[in-house]
Image (cartoon, rainbow, N blue to C red; front, side, top):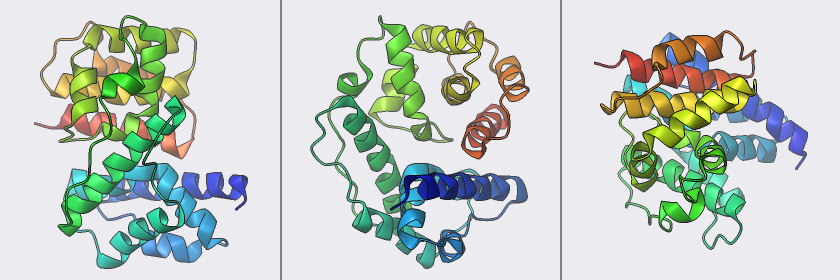
Length: 230
């Protein structure tokens, strides 16, 4: 599989999800896969975008079709989930897989999935907030409306570390990472936490400097939905 093709397909898929959020429809994963020149790369893109493929269904209650559910299941057949992570990159992927399979089970009625190890293992100590916030950013797909679970609880319990991390990325002009952390800030704010950062101003600031990369624009779209939710 060509990695560059997979990355392009992932950007295209994220753009479809973003368009679905704006237009009130679904991402139509089956149509996306049919449009890919390389089916394997297309399924790799589904794995990369991960749980975010379900955002139109989570945010807008758009029904998930059987064909779309089959596409997600096929992506795990071609690219099996991480079951015994050793390196931290694998641990991050294991939590991504857990989030994707958990949402798939929610929409299909399948059996619940096994939770990975204690999130402290992948996140590390929040006292080392520069590193901690980088890992939290890598797990941005776990931050969505209605999100629950061990990682959400662990991040929500450390609002100061989270805000320090996002301010650091903004000051460093790393707006790709900032968009991911902004998504978490919005989720923690929606959960009722009092934060030293104004999430609305943060979304506006990061959005004005982010550029046009679909996966990062999707992060901000989720943040806006979280801030607008009653």
